[in-house]
Length: 415
Image 1: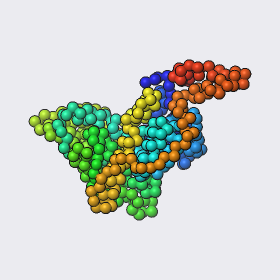
Image 2: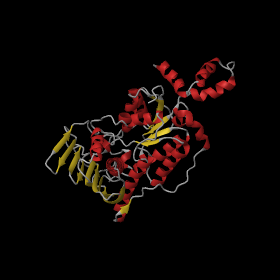
Image 3: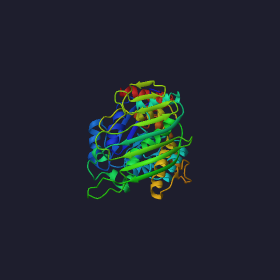
Image 4: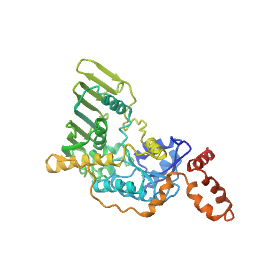
């Protein structure tokens, strides 16, 4: 990593995922700086500010158009993800967007294509992949420990977002279709729709499902307008079959367990807190591995996603959990909803939708934004000649050096 550089972040949305994931992890990263936070409910932004000493701003535009911000974490309700991500990309920002990345495949496609056209980085918060048990499992699968994978069973369920989100209670935005688009399948099922392809190295290509609202009520005592339970059967591109369940009505301890069955044995992830990765082979051999835990709503562990995003920006590499992976996870969710509505097995639309992208030419000027501000001030300083203003003239000198040295000087001063 280029240690002398610093990535300056803005945060849109100050809900629980921003509090306990993005802001927390970025505040602990020496190569990241939190510059501003905005939430339409100002008290939430002020609370986040009190924890991480981040200035509160009064509008989305104050973050989107801030030239002192290099990257933005979009942590809003699902309905705002695409609009804000595209606006930030056009303003020259790299974007780390929460899942699901959008509420339809057209918007998700626009997000990806906008990032590509403008040369910006788009990463989706697929935080399950870097959890220690899943990293260990991927390695073991690649080594062929359980032989050829044939089937899997995976679940993600808890008692509902109303106990964890900042909207504590049945009025939470998670329960409103116009804000969330989808319920437990978008909140929890989507995690498994990217985790399983990542673990197995193949795409989900077909889905059959039952999706229902069985128990949750809104603040008026009526059934919520999104799903609270889903049971899905999935087919992978290599023929592997599996079952995915997502639920907001698993009252009591969370269920985030995955079992993968191969020709030589099976692997169980997340069932045993002492040994989160267990392997049972058909020859009778048992292998148990102590790893870090998988995060829950009650016990958070570092996801590594914000840190990885910082590295991708500073090292100028493509994010491993990019928009395409986010798109395919969303496409699997959409296919599950379609299957429930039609009563048919549905194909997963893994190819981007044919959409037009309006990428503002002005956004191309923002490319240097990921490097710190001195490089931008260098051009005016040359024209101004030192006589114009003393302060800019001093800043102009570092501009003759490389961008990294300039950023290094700036960082050293802060330290």
